[in-house]
Length: 158
Image (cartoon, rainbow, N blue to C red; front, side):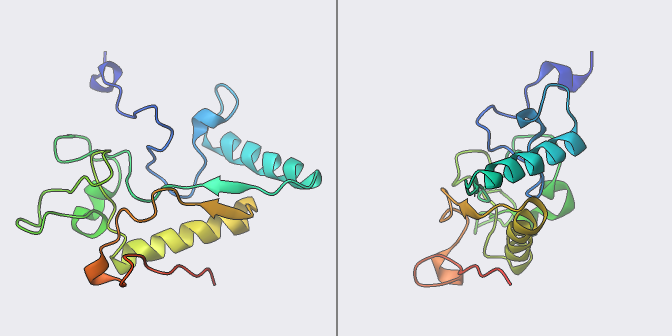
């Protein structure tokens, strides 16, 4: 039995993602992989549009499934460049902050991260044809002192 077989790494909230640009495979038909999940999502959007229903996608960019400092698994941004992608404690610039309650908080103040978010939103519009977005935790990950007076960075799809 492998190590991952004894540990449930991804919480079942529905927002623990490692890719901002792909539908979660568990929302697809049983046994479907990533490619099938993408096809099914596109077909769903097409069918909803055919009957006049717009698709608003609920997206969460304030954390990832990667966990925090106590999580030994490097599956995404922590393995690439955690200082860019996650908010860190000001005292040490090592400890990952957890304002999201999910183990980490994505650093939306960083231009690289902000570009990833904008690219992701654009991808969902162009590739999956969604009509809009709900960003329920949009203020987590933005720091007022480094972005704007309201603590939000304006996003504009180009």
